[in-house]
Length: 108
Length: 112
Image 1 (tube, each protein chain N blue to C red):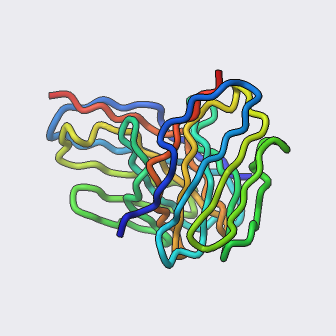
Image 2 (tube, each protein chain N blue to C red):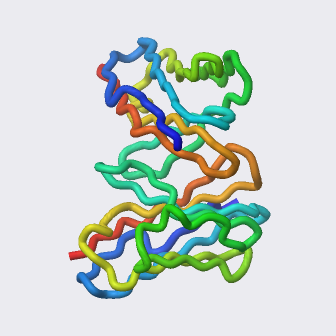
């Protein structure tokens, strides 16, 4: 089976940097994805790492280390609109399993 | 593109009633997923279709749940009979392949 662990919540101020870690335990796993979900909304795709290393998309970056079964999402220059839940997700074949999510609260 | 379209947005029903949730995937996407989200269990995959064929329904909680995809542009998730513990947000998602899933707005189901 698949198990993805991530912190339940993080609070930070506007302009700060937040790192959300995700560790996983699975065999046959390939790639780590990140999704954002605002309260009452649908999950939306942020990034995907198939290979080790850092992927940067604007203020958000995602990292993967397959040897360590570990990844993270880095949110830079935090804005109030970044307050949301962030999910890491791992796939075996077509089955995308989600972590429990990290609630990020951005304070003024 | 209109995105993944789900209906209804909200459904309130009484225990024992039949509930049908609907989903229209993005045109050209050949994979469709039904997820359920609750505070206790998070996002759970219920069933996956590829090219309209159910590939894996191991996530369907029990026989009260059934899903169909009669064509590439429509899928339904049916609960009969519904129970209070089925209360959740049900998401439909589609993809052309790969890791980027596009989610619909979800159906908030409340079974009283």
